[in-house]
Image (tube, rainbow, N blue to C red; front, side, top):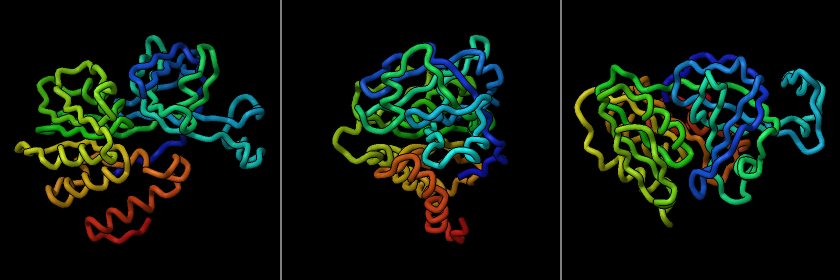
Length: 281
């Protein structure tokens, strides 16, 4: 994975739900706005993300909202739970923040919340973070991911330099999950069906005939598929780390809390396996 800049302490924001929309059977859009986003600012990345804060039922936090104070004064079981989501779009003039959520019925925390939240409700969040944007100096671009990476890939496609050579692959459950993206780039939509997550995506990227020249790649999604594509890019094609944004957004069998705890060690082990470097994380 490319080295990321030093992280700033995430900034807390309060927002109100403006509207919601079901985009596909398993993708829900929530648009946030309000004066609480007055200091929200992106920095040109197309993979900007925010951490939504979900407090336990019945717990009220003091104002102004301060995570350090909460961690100092509240028992751990009353701390907010975080869930990380890509910024699909940010409109600074309208002060509207668009987030898209993968929904699987009542499974998980943020997906069910996104389907039932109503306009006017308060939302607290941290961020934004993010580090990737398409490099206009690259000869060609590869974008690959599952539905969890769809918002970031869509944002990257819409930000591509005019005339950029792009290969874009998105794996989704079926044709009903395809979305319209405001880009001239032709997206290869891969329908998973009953196959394991990532299998079709790895096959498609592995079968790709790589164009000549310098590649800039964005590969995100389930950790297992990311591991396989990292091997393809770093080991087989010898793509430099600095030309890759590649990381697992999630992992089968893990919720976000478990995955964030394990992710650093997982990345270190994968790097050690694939490149022979010490697993120091």
